[in-house]
Image (tube, helix red, strand yellow):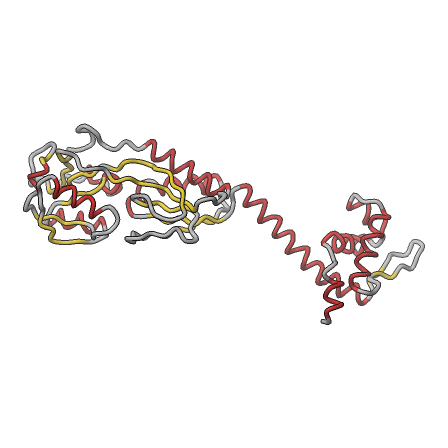
Length: 312
């Protein structure tokens, strides 16, 4: 295609193509105008503009009661024009779905949130917007990046051009075999030299272990893994005890396991903080905005143990 033709064709507008399709289907300018809600002169003007853009007639006009017919050029233009109309309609539908909330959302998460908070978020989003596309990724890197994610859950605030909402304080609890410690809270110094299984030294784990050391205890870490179920299996097997955040304990339903006991520590360790992040200045889609609302509601309904509640 030469440049002159390309420049002319670029003047074709969707309303021109829509008018052409209506005329071809109705067989007359008058009926097409009535269908589109235009005057007949407006439809004629649109077809005239289209013919200038493609440099040739698109309809044969026999006059009288006989219907208008497409010219060979008109057939080519309408074939491609209908494809443009279909794409435009698909775009309009996608925009409407996006505004209604039925779009796509990408969420970064980690184990505890995945087990306790995120199921409620996903369930409610899908109930409210059955056509939504929810994509989750779970990772616990030392330096998390929001990247292309719409939302990112993380145990702590992340650096960079992001905004955040604190969801909750997540206190640490001691999980041990039922015969390891007496019922009730365990003094922090009792952990000195005790075999422990623990998470790798990422996220909030180093801060928690430093807090234990400041409390005068240096447990003997005999095994590290990022998988909560594996840690708890090792506790059940007697390899060692574990200090875990309340969300991890709740998600594993440890309270119903008679082989294990949950103890508070005295003095309590500083709770880890769970945040929801998003890129600064980003306008949330309705779906992402609703996800934030649900996450905040779910977190507010959670009641971590304080002053002796929730541990046994």
